Length: 325
Image 1 (cartoon, helix red, strand yellow):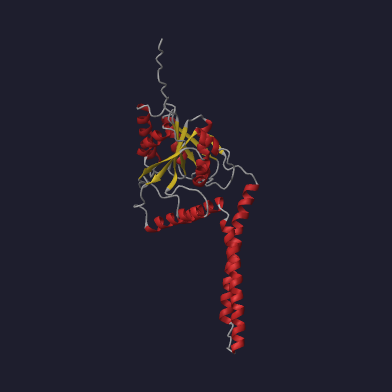
Image 2 (tube, one colour):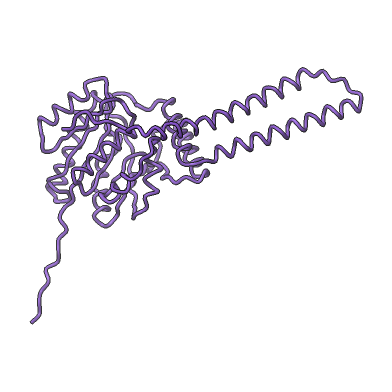
């Protein structure tokens, strides 16, 4: 007797949308409305399960961000959740707190994105499609940087090239708009360093990955939380967290300084031999400033690494959750 086998239908996955927030009161309601509409659509079309959630992570905001998150939760307890950190710990720690909370609540995958609607919510459909086809990590990659200023575009491209040249792995034009499966989140939970740079950590996890290209939009409201100062600090954080090549540069700078000093010594001997008058002041000042600058630069690079070792050795918690909705 022939037995007819009924093909198994994979149930729609439970997806948590994790959005770190810091002083996002101006545009948070607009973001919640746009994302909730997308979640309702994906649920109705059976692309994701009804157990999917939108999880806002308040990173110690000083405005009414947390009050808005509470209002959203009261409006729809089934859809909106919230995590309030007891103190401002920075974007990367807030994002990690949200991802680990989603993992603890048994999601099949988590999609991290910014709370300012710059990450295109319409790209989520393709994220889900690629995840359901077997990809454990899906990266959101900007298709173009036409809306960026020349300075921001140039510095971003330079950073990715330097990062790659130093031997660290990253995805060019990818920020933190990504999907991570439960298995990938489990792997991420095993990384315990305090100096977090998720854009560098996630590519090292392995697993099958894919990319979704999208056009990054303008902020829905408010101002960017990443001014030039924070961008520079973030770049230094990323480079020193994944490469020791800057320490090699210190050695190279020291050797260069010695060669210059040796060259100056030969120049002085030659000048004495030919009877030239040596004023001395100019060459001495250049040498002092050059050597002094190299020493200070070298101490600064070494100090960055010593500081990181110091922070890691204390084993302090990366964040502390005050309230969970």
